[in-house]
Length: 72
Image 1: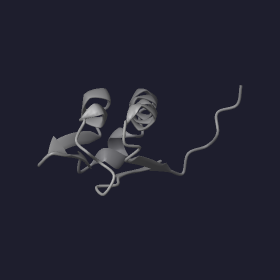
Image 2 (image 1 turned 90 degrees about the vertical axis):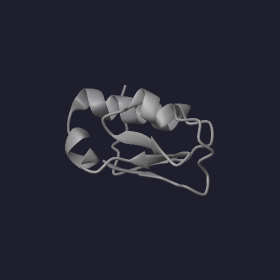
Image 3 (image 1 turned 90 degrees about the horizontal axis):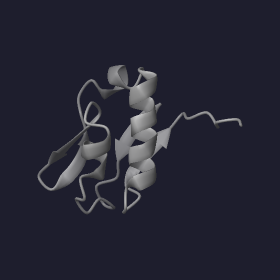
């Protein structure tokens, strides 16, 4: 999973940093991906928190790539 934050969309709600603090930080009024986030995203609980952060981001600024669809 590759995670990024589109700064042009982000308006600083900090939902990402609240929901997945191992991956996101809040700096200068924007959500940012922490250094080393790729390693943290290897943990299934962290991946789920990142998915939730992307889903709950009010500005849709959290972008996920390389996600597999969930069957069910």
